[in-house]
Length: 345
Image (cartoon, rainbow, N blue to C red; front, side, top):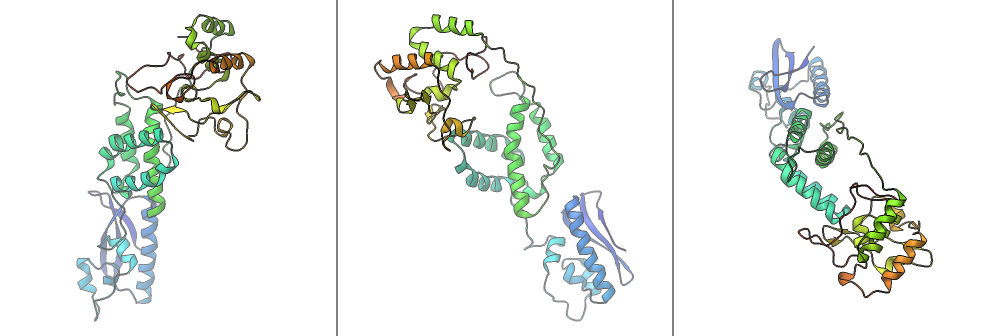
């Protein structure tokens, strides 16, 4: 009875069986994984079936083996079967591409689904994190151990422009495109993804300390007059920074007291048609109404409408900001503020 074993020096699998009184051990180019063992077991079953039937042709299964000459038949020049290609890994056998090449294919196919800001984020992670680490490795040779080692190294890496290390949420975001690339490669090239059973790092829940309604009113009453309507919208609609910065009159419905989010500003540019985190309800893409704004908001919005238009088409903040300039008022810590809410500095 033959067996599938692993070489201690290379970690690759080899087939161990007996034929015509000789012990035969044939090396493969397959790493020791459960999927590869199952694959070779099927090959070994076929070998032993042909041996028992007296039809086994050694060179047909192992054309590059030194043992083939010992068992050559009268006509040794036989066609190489797909089984032989898969086992021996000879020229012409299916192989997986380098990570850097397949990552480009994956990015080109997926990027049309994303907004511009997300394209830039994924592009940076691929170029600056993933390709330097895995670029010269075949996607089919990347192991679970490689991924875990990469994750451990990320946990020791400093965050950009900061003295702290990369946070768990940031590490998870870097690993997400790696997971998707390898899962897609596994599906196309028929190998088991090494990401199996690798979970995302735990993320601590952020505590939010909201402003009271009295504090909100005090802020609005004391803020600079030209920012009063801006903060009124921020506090009483729950709109995000980029959503207000890209707001135009054509997206304000006074009759129904609705504000439609259509051109949020990201990275200093309007993201036309980009999806927001709250989905279709903010976009109105499937007929759902956007949230209504309260009467105080309507009053302030009407007051702003009576003023001369600002530059750049954005009605509440003027020109979209450049990343090197600070043209907007500081937003409360904790990000988005809901109805009657905010966060204390």
